[in-house]
Length: 498
Image 1 (cartoon, rainbow, N blue to C red):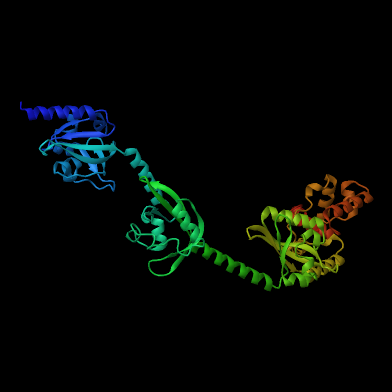
Image 2: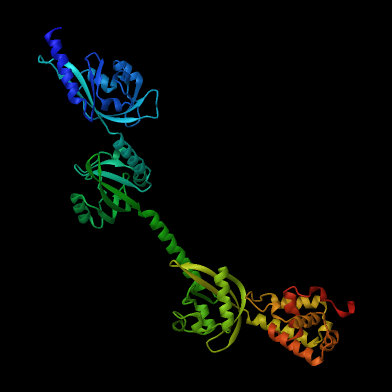
C-alpha cells in the first residue's frame, strides 16, 4: 500500500472520529458517489442504524429515499444533494423533506450543505454532506403557514430588515384585488399600507422600533384605482430568525353598509312613527320609561310632550285602571306582543275613551322597547253598549233568550274583548257555579230557589256575588261571560224546547 493511500485512510479515520459525536448529520462519499460512512446523527435522520441501509451509492440512495421540496414538489433524482455534490456543486441551506420509500408515514426535514475535502495537491479526496434536522422547526413553520393562510382576516407580513413583504394571505388579496406577485417582494414604499393612517407618524415610529402598532383607520390604495377604508394594526414577530411585522386589517366597507342600512331603516321608522294618525308610544321594556310619542298621541290625549317624555307609563297614568296596566305589561313581557286588547284610556282632562291596544317589542339603540298603538274605539263601543242595553231592556227575563240571540250578544261583546288575565270559573264557589249554570238555563231567581231548595233571598245574594266576581251587571252579561268560556253550552236552549 502506497504512502498516499495510507495517509488518506488515516485522515479519514481521524475525520470519522472527530465527527462521530456531532449532532449534525455527516455522510462521506467518494468522488464516484460511493457512500463510505455516516455518523449516528445522519443515520437517525434517515431512520436507519447502519450505513449500508442508506445504499451503496447515490443511485441506490435515490431508490430508498424520496425527497421533496418544501413546496411539496418532488426533487428530481439529478437534483438530490448527493448527486449535486458529486457533480462538483457547492451549496448551503438546501431544505428537503426526506421519506423512506417503504415508509411514507416517516418524514424528516433536512437543511443540507456540501463540503469538499482535498489532498495536498488540491485534488478532491472526499465529498461531505452535512445536514441538520429541522423537522420540528419546519412543522411549526408549516402550522404557522396554514394558520396564516386560512385566517379570513386580511394580513401581510413585512420583513423589517428591508421593509419588503414576504407573506400575504388570501383574505388580503380578496379584499384589495391585488395578486400575490403584486405583493410578495414589494417594498412598503411601493405599497404603503399606512397611507392615510390617522396616526401615521406613530405607526412609522413603532415600525422602526419593532413594537406593536395600535389599531387605527387608514386608506389602502387599490390596484385598479380608488381607495378602501380599513382598520390596520401591527404585531412584531420572528420568522426564520428574522424580525418581521404582521399587519392585519378589518375592511370597513361592510360595516359602513350596515350602518347606512340601519340609519335608513331608522329614518323610515321615524317618518312612519311621526306621520301615522293613530296614537303611538315607545317605552323601555325594563322600566316602562316613555322614549317617544307621536303627534297623534299628544293630540288625542291632550298632553304636552314635556309631560310625557322621560316619564314612566305609571307616572303619566293615562291607563284608567292600574290593574289593567299591570296585566297588560305582564302579558307583553311574557308574549312579546299584544293584539287589540280593550283598554280604557284617560285623557289629560279626565275624559275616558275606549281603545284597542296593540303592542310589539322593538330594538332601539340595542335596547328592547315596547311599541304601543292605541286605536280609539269609543264610538263603536258606545254603539255596541247601546244595542246590548236596548235588547236587555226589552228582554229582561233571560228565559226569553234564544240560543241565537245569546250567541249574537256574545259575539258583539267579544269582538275586541281583552286578552288579559281575568276571573276564572274556579274562583266561584260550588253553590255559585250551580247558580250561574241555572242562570244560563234561563231560570229566574224563584225557579233557581225552587230547584236548589234555597230561600229566595239566599239565591239573590248568590246572584249578586256572582255578578261581583265576574264583573258583570246583568243576567245577559253573565250568560255571555259563560258563553265566551264554553261553560254550560249544553244548557243554552229556550224553555219552549224542553
